[in-house]
Image (tube, rainbow, N blue to C red; front, side, top):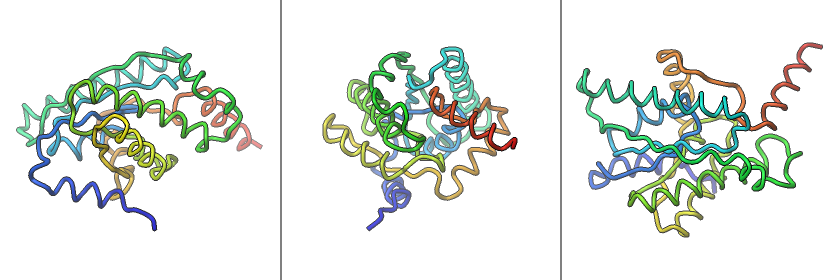
Length: 218
């Protein structure tokens, strides 16, 4: 039986006792986090955790990191100026561990995008998120990854729940692409003129994307 992770999240958000709890939110980039932050900031005290060693080029990594911080500043400014009922958002940047990513996915370099190599990458980023969430004393951890139509939400939640048991921090179930979440993220990206790319960041996804574009020329 397929689980409805979006409905499970709504149930948690509807519980008044959960309001104001601490959430450690892994974010892959500003565009993907935009809707998630808009959606969750009235309910949780969020720390956005930017940890993406899968991004092969350091210049690209830094550009995405700075764009993430810019979006958070804009959202926090809104709270003050427009008196939006939401909690201020904090940000924490993890280490840029490019070599560790390659060590993690060794032997899976030739997997197609969206398969086993990606699952290992999910696990790497979620594991670090769980570690930092535990150290910070957060009530929950989760990730923005499920907002992408190209990401396997069931696998993301499965990995998160496994790590939750290991680190003793609750994992917040999600499938943020539901309820037009992805569509809204695209709208917000336009509104805030966010820098966005059409590949996840690793050299493998970039190569596959470029090869796909080459094929379309013929």
